[in-house]
Image (cartoon, rainbow, N blue to C red; front, side, top):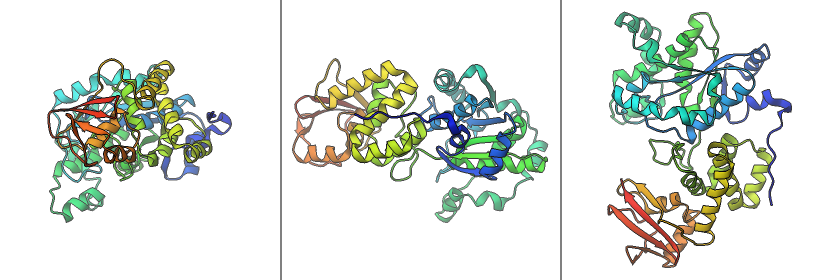
Length: 394
């Protein structure tokens, strides 16, 4: 049996600036020097573009908690104004603009979810509508005059859209300028965000440097699938903080093996040398340990134990107790993904083997194609003798 050690606090500063970190601007050494002088005021922002947070958010919030535990002043910014525009980062089509009511509804459920990771009593919670909604046209012209069109179209997603004939709308240029202005309004020394936010975070550094102040940027690694797509709302592959512990455990167990190392690094405190050794020696056991650790962190140890037992009963023992599990998907979704999400199988290779062995039935008819998609509004799936699932189109 494997027993993991947590990271020792002997070199907490080094761990703070290395674990899960992609890049630090201007340099690691300069930020380390600044942190050695005393507490720093830092922030990270979340745009409420959906009603729930997910593990992509959680990995960044975990880094914030590390700074919080070291005695630094954490500001959590809810981008209720910037969410009205939509962050174009990584998007090869224009985001749907949200209404103020949609943004307000999305924010409602965040507090409880945030409280599982951060000490909210010690967090300065702000909303960027406080300063952005009051900017006049004169103010906006002044802000935009601090950037060039050439700077904006350097962004990969804009270049790709232009080359493929897709439109780039002028309002999308506003987003990095407004996010940059958040740093000015909050008067921070450090911003933390995912590596896909580097352009936006450096915009704030540009504005602060013009005002005579240094701003550090710490970009974290992203939780991505093997194709490089973020595990988030847009791609439909997220583990949400609003999920039940059972659902979260099952979804993590459906992750490809290639995602496990990033999961351990970004979402646990396991020593990475031990995590890598466990993955190599016992991939299934390592994935169970990863799922258990994440669920215990976000939902509590008791619920993690129960979720693991539920998963093992369904998968390892082939038992179904109570109602048949349900998975909600978009029409034409790949059936394998829905079954993996349920936790009834542990990998796409196992799904393929079961299908080719004739062990999978949908509505009483054997499935012969492992890449089958979901067509009907509701489909009853049977795997072997004792594993059942209802796949429901949203």
